[in-house]
Length: 403
Ligand code: SAH
Ligand code: SF4
Image 1 (cartoon, protein in one colour):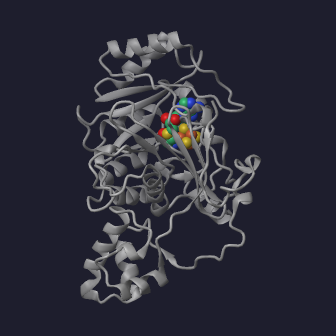
Image 2 (tube, helix red, strand yellow; image 1 turned 90 degrees about the horizontal axis):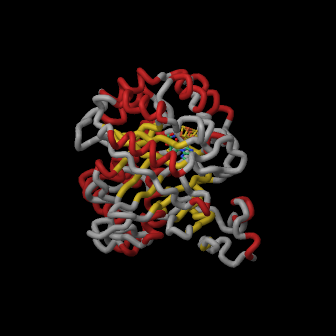
Image 3 (cartoon, protein in one colour; image 1 turned 90 degrees about the vertical axis):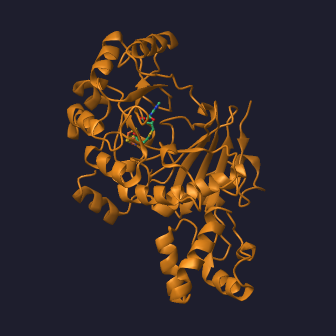
């Protein structure tokens, strides 16, 4: 069966063979540029600042911020005229200065299993992928990106082959959620039944190389007058940026996932070069000290099953030893191949035996059914075509030791 492709009006009428064309071919070349300030993606503080600068009287800024914040994030409105508790004249003035636009969905793919992948253009040359994975039980998760590309080069990961273009802003992270909520038709946010219940930072990039913006985005997502996600429904996944693990926990109270994938330093460094900088002992120490860690707030350890690399009984033993004393669960991810990938997925039987061993040691260890493989939306398969990184940005990161 083929996948259902696409939506954006920019290319809705394009011939079929152009539908997967890259962004350059889909640009609104003749559309006048909207020079208004985009409000969607701003947090309360920025919104208040923008309204103050616009000229709202100081004693009304708080009220107006609250109203507009709710219209944007609870009701998802894209039209100023929908804001019925703001006088018509003021609405018109606001509409001249500020836009409520969403970024363009360059491509939208729906897998045979219902997974949806969005390629979103945040700015010229800045394209990110987000993936909605519908519920198998009760939770449907949106997997969001925190960077365009990644500075790390985990050998099994497709994103790792894409150079870093830049960090995403908090607004661009929140916008991924807005776009998905539009597509799923789940406004207002306060609606009781929602398909998108969880947010996982498991898309492109390393969230803890962009900790401040990720934390700011989580504040926007969790505001109970807006998008209303519970903090325990947000998971930040890291390849092991040790110095920021505590910081993200303190700032956000989000759940933590660790991309572990190997349980001895030699193998882990081989497949995840970051392990050289932050070896396993340091990583596990940071996990033990994760704020709020308890049996009801366990850390998820992700473990990709690579044939003849990390899938033997000896490896299972190492994993059990490493996790000792940590409230943990293990997600076993069958390796998702991508063009040119250097590994193979372990056999199903091997994965099941591995899972049995981990289970027997008292850790839940579900085997993750790959979702959205047909549209390249599964773990580690994301990669956009935004390849360039500004020289200044690269220098900044080099200085900070993040390249
Ligand atoms: N950079 C962060 C967030 C990405 S999460 C991190 O590494 O944690 C994406 C998850 O998918 C990570 O656990 C990653 O290690 C895993 N992954 C990467 N490539 C994969 C592949 N080809 N098959 C299965 N899982 C993969
Ligand atoms: Fe980057 Fe995570 Fe992929 Fe590693 S697994 S290359 S850290 S996105």
